[in-house]
Length: 490
Ligand code: ZN
Image (cartoon, rainbow, N blue to C red; front, side, top):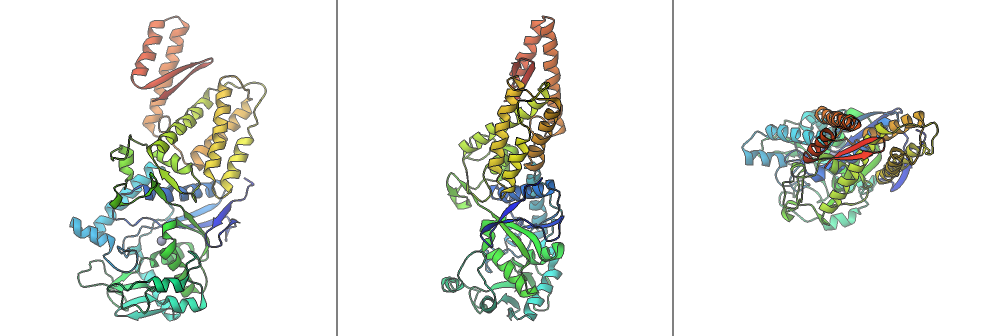
């Protein structure tokens, strides 16, 4: 495809043409979940955004190494350097070993991603499996003079770093403002400055997750794992680092500072951030009672939900917004997405029933040209989906005989339509081809309806009516067409 991908780089605040550092290889790193609770809506958007990027880059012919980490140590409750480790706290509450909590929720996360048809990354490293690499990075930062030891913990010296480099360049924050806004919290007095952040924390006697280091028995700071693991698996510089906008500060700002302090240059060439999801206009939060897990969405089991929403409805809904726009969840919006998805899937099935002619009245090159131009414009999936819907109308006209298409154009159209919908957007036809069972159901319905046509042809209306009525009772709507039939599971 000739259209060059343009990416909005959060660091430079403009769209840039994507040029891999070492084409055709692309290094992509995305911050994954902290695994201490059920996967929820907030997990779905970054996963689907970067799955679309992964799929699109692959579709363009790049060889992508996609690394998405699992945070299983060091993420403290207040996202700074105080409070309990989120996983250790859950382990204590549930009376489990922390790694049992990690294993349980990692599997839950992976299962939910599979439901959403999010492809697994190439590597899924865990923070606790890379303590040695993290200790090495702390040593480099200490050697370069950008960190200090205090009571067995190591802190990054933000003020000193900022005399030579620019702390705050990603988030656009002003360091003087940050210093004046930093409140003195209990347990933070070992820092020289409130804005400093932990690279290594000495563990208190009751802290379970601990490893030996040259400074103390302790654990790494949260931001360090992503710097250490991206360097290990993607080298530096590497191409794209992604994550939710909520991670821009402090997490990604600290990653930049750590890389520059350790290696003397930045590790990331393009920073990409997806926007957040709101629920009925409000931020999602446990205290607001609007916190919805993916399992609750898939089962409809939440007071805010009017019905069950399938994984593909959620995926399609997320893709209907460009990843940098806000996205508001509501029953109305989800129901509209569900209807749109059904129309798209019905058109896909219809492609197999179009009868070719000796000439074409439609220009099939229009579909890939416009859809890929939209996706190359910073992953503008809503425009690509609008182009698909233009073609849903064309496909319906073709099936009704209002437009004509040659055999070879029909093959091109079918191939391009399915490549965009299934390979790039990652949609699965949950009624027709999502699983072996769904595929079989589709084939059985087709078989019954073909038998019904045969019954009608020999004027056996009793049989043809019985097939139709029984299918209707089972929730299959049947529509007769000039040259056959069409059906939908409602
Ligand atoms: Zn990260």
